[in-house]
Every structure is written in C-alpha cells, then in structure tokens.
View 1 (cartoon, rainbow, N blue to C red):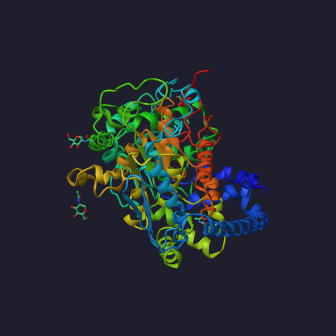
View 2 (cartoon, rainbow, N blue to C red; view 1 turned 60 degrees about the vertical axis):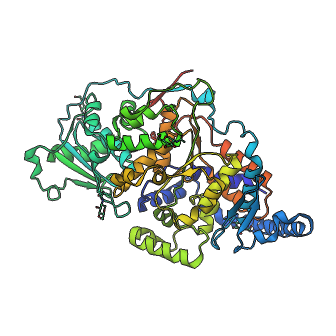
View 3 (tube, rainbow, N blue to C red; view 1 turned 180 degrees about the horizontal axis):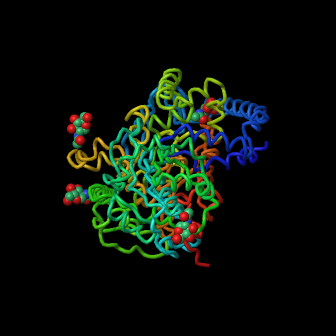
Length: 588
Ligand SMILES: *[C@@H]1O[C@H](CO)[C@@H](O)[C@H](O)[C@H]1NC(C)=O
Ligand SMILES: *[C@@H]1O[C@H](CO)[C@@H](O)[C@H](O)[C@H]1NC(C)=O
Ligand SMILES: *[C@@H]1O[C@H](CO)[C@@H](O)[C@H](O)[C@H]1NC(C)=O
Ligand SMILES: *[C@@H]1O[C@H](CO)[C@@H](O)[C@H](O)[C@H]1NC(C)=O
C-alpha cells in the first residue's frame, strides 16, 4: 500500500506558515492557492479515494478481528466497555488511587485514553525516554543569533510617513509591525508608531503602548529607521481616504515583493507624503528580500519589541511559580522579562538544562480556530450548527465558499493533517512521547472550545497542569482581565520560556513565533515538539485497534522526524525559521 506517497503530500501542509492568530479568510484562500499551484493534492485525493476506501476496509476487518480476539483472549482490562461511548473509564493504579477519565459522549478515544492512563501509571518510576527534553544539540548549537549586526546608515525617512493599523491578535500584530518596519526602510519613510485594529474575535482595545515599550522600540531601531509617535500637525488634518492614501489588504497583493512596493506604493507616498496601511497581514514576502532588510525584520522581532513592565511582571510571576521558586533563569528570561528576570543561573553547557523542567502546551482549540478549520470534532449535528453559525458571523467569506462546495470535506482535511489537535489528541501525544504523570505542564490558550470539561482527560492524566489563571491570584490577574492580547502575552512568555514546548497547530502564530524565539535564543537547548499532524491523523485513525506500544513508537517517530535542524526553506517565515543567514550565523 502506498502510504508514503500519501504522507508525501502532507509535507506541504504540515509545517505551513499559512494561518495566523486570527485565522482570516485570506489565510484559507492562500492555503487553497497553494493547493492549486503546488501539488494539487485535492485532485490526487480523488485518485486516492479508492485507496483510502481500501485502507478503511482493511482497518474495519482488522478492527473486527482484533475485537474478537479481545473478547476471547484478554482480561477485563481492555473490556469492551471502553468502546461504549457512555462509559466512564476507571483504571486502578499501582499506587492504589483511582483515575477517572470521565468520558462525555462526544469524546472519542476512550480506549486509547485508558491505555495511556495505564502506561503513565506504570511508568511512574521509569526513566523518561532519551532526548525527550532535548533538541539535536550538536547541530542546533552551531547557529548563533546575529541579527543585531548592522551594515548601513540610518534612513532619514524623508520620503514621507507610513502609518499602519495591524489586524489580528497579539502575534499577528507583531509580524505586521516588523514587516512595516522593513517597508519603512525600503521606502525611506518615517514610521508612525503602529496602531492595533479592534478585532471582533479578540475584542481588545489595547494599543501598541499597552503591550510594548514605545521608547525602546523607537530608540532600538534608530540606527535603522526614523519612528515618530504621531503624524506631524500639518498632515493630521488630511483626509487620507479622500486622497487615496489608505492602503487596505485588498490593494496590496499577498506576499508582495520589495519591487512591488517601489513600483506601486512609493509613487503614492511621494505624492501624498503619508500612507496608511490598514490590516497589513502577510503583505511583505519573505523571498526575495535584500539581506540587510531581512535582517532588519529579524532585529525588530527579536530585539525591538519588549513587553511593558506590567506584562513582564506578570510573566515573571508565572515563570517563578511554574519553576517552583527555583533560582533558575532560562536563556530567554532577559529578553522576555527585562529587569524582572532573575540573574542567569547558567545551566551546564551541553545537554540538559538545569532547573525544574516544565512543558508548555499551546492548545490552539478556541472556537475561532475550531470553526475556521472546517473540521469535525466529534460533536455531531449540534457542533456542526454551532460552528456554522460562528463562521457566518466571523468568517462570512468562508461560508460563501462552503455554500459553493469549493472546500474539502472535514474527512479530507483531517487525513491531510489540517485540523488542530483536540485536547484528547494532545494528551495522547504527550503520553505517547513519554512525559510522565509528574510533568509540570503550563497550558496556554484562551477559552477551550467545549468548555473546561473538555480538559478532563488532560488534567486526569497530568495532575500538575496549570494555566496562567491558576498561577496568578485573582487580584494579580485583574489588570489583564479585559485585554485578551495582554493575556496572550502572558501565554507567549509561558510558552517561549518553557523547557519543552508542544504545539497542537503549527499554523498558529503564537506557536510559530514561540518556536522561532526558542531557536534564536535557545542555544540549541530548547526542545520544541511540533507534531506532523498528517502522520498523527493516520495513527489516530487506528484508535480502536492499535496497541499502546505501537502507538507510542509511531507517535515518537512522527515527532522525532520534525526535530531536524535545517536552514529556513525559501519563502518561509523568518520569524518561524530564524535559522537563515540574515538572522543567525552558522559556525561551521
Ligand atoms: C533611500 O535612501 C538611500 C540613501 O539615501 C538611497 O540610496 C535610496 O535610493 C533611497 N530609496 C528610495 C526608495 O527612496
Ligand atoms: C513558592 O513560594 C511561595 C511564596 O513564598 C509559596 O507560597 C509556594 O508554596 C512556593 N512554591 C513551591 C512549589 O515551593
Ligand atoms: C472589564 O470590563 C467590565 C465590563 O465591560 C468592567 O465592568 C470592568 O470594570 C473592566 N475591568 C477592568 C480591569 O478594566
Ligand atoms: C477512531 O477509530 C474509529 C474506528 O477505526 C474511526 O472511525 C474514527 O475516525 C477514529 N477517530 C479519529 C478521530 O480518527
């Protein structure tokens, strides 16, 4: 059976930079364009349909045979009640305490979760698998940060003023800001301190200065571009709409090249003296871009954007508590926490980082992502209706495409690895990788779709699981409460500084940026777990028959294969893949 060719198709998606914080219709559109121009897997799908059908039949027969075997052969441990979707699975542990995996009707994977609970209970005192908390250090440590090196004179910004109002959530805004910095330099323009657009999804009124230190941003980039806080008085009264100075995302092509800006945007700037970019998601290509300009973008991302003291302080409390008050400080603490970072306690150079380890899990399973993915999550008609209604409000363009039948089906999306991992899938992955029950887990993410009960399997298998809401007292949390971007900044800190970081959707911008920071500052020691979801989907499809040992092996392999140290592939994000000559230097 030609499984490898199916897996081959997935490569193009599993690690895509396509989706952002707030998945927008454009992202999906770009995804579809990729599909059309690159491999056209949907076409191949039709051809593969037969194969998949055959595969399905094979599993069905397999399942039937195995379930017969179970009935006749095995003890009560793997009783058929696990398959009964209403049952609650009760497992007796060695220690004598009882873990209850309350399995709501909607939740699949009852059988596997039970096996996972067993494996964790048995593995309490076993050593963790080799390399669980590590990156391929020898190769990764050859890359050193070097985006701070400048090789040009400051731009005077005489050609006019660029204003930008970035859309999306915290992390999408960060990318837009650094792209705008590069465009300002490209056009010899002065940048006006960026503004953030109010989003119906994130509902946060925070502006640049509520999140990042304005003075640091302006001063740090002084050798590169001129940044002012406001437009000069004489320009403030201009009606930008009337003079055609408002440039929306419809006016600039996606991933536009520098030549496009010089040809189409510069004349407008010279004529009107001021331009306002509205939205500005993904509007500057990653290749080809002159290397000094690329480096400026990296510099912006890795140095110029420092959180305000309020966020640094909140982040410091989180790190201190999840590290159980130890005096350890990680390689990113100084950048993330500024003066609130502890004095670096140098871990032994080489492999394991000293200090209490914790795993950060970014569970990107909020309703916007869930709805936008167009996938099924086992909730039946009720779920379908709810997500459909959400799409109608927030992603109307997606609904239109859906009506015209232009989109792949939920099953196709799932087998292609394009669905975010559910909480159950995430916990199964962690258990299979060998994280034991004592692991301290920092769970990042806002409102999990399906509510807190959806986290039952995670918390029952990993009792030391915390969120920023648990780690901070209500009064410590209060100043952040109404500001989803500021809360997201706390998650950003918790994820980026963790000893190991596991993501559930590689298209998520937080996950992408956190991985990039860990590469840039981590010295080859900060493990990042980025599942190949196409492969995982294939493994999960066998949930009702697969043996735990086999499940473990296959999941470990699927994750190991993504832990490669490679140069940034052409056209991919420098923020996500800073291992490229403009951002990092390779010591041979
Ligand atoms: C920007 O300024 C530099 C140096 O003065 C000059 O070489 C370059 O051509 C200018 N570019 C634009 C787009 O005005
Ligand atoms: C850390 O210190 C705080 C305050 O001193 C204390 O309440 C807490 O129990 C400590 N946590 C651990 C894990 O030692
Ligand atoms: C948050 O918003 C609620 C309702 O909009 C308001 O009552 C409350 O005072 C706000 N809290 C803060 C800290 O701004
Ligand atoms: C679990 O296994 C069943 C039976 O093989 C399959 O129909 C189902 O799609 C699987 N669930 C997932 C989420 O892959």
